[in-house]
Length: 130
Image (cartoon, rainbow, N blue to C red; front, side, top):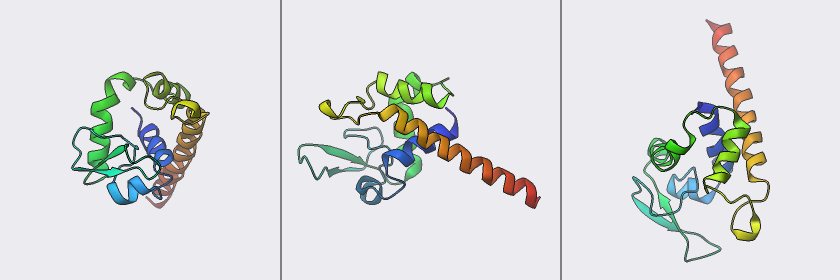
């Protein structure tokens, strides 16, 4: 999976690091418990029955995401296709009416595009300073 797809998904899910699950639980992918490699749980504020996984750091959260969804997403590089696949495999339903987010695939695709632009700028700056 391309780096920008993972970073774009994480940026969207954790509200660019400002989401409660990211701040308090290093859960940058909003993964429900139980999850691979979790070290605890945090309760969702709007529904105390919902438990979210807690991870020790971003790397472990990525490993958990990869172990849970990697086989179903491997080989998908296009941002739109990746985002639609997330809905297809049930990572998010894409519908608010059943717990998801309306327009989820497009929101994630746009987030991936923003990350890709930033990564390209970083690469250009590295090349210029070399």
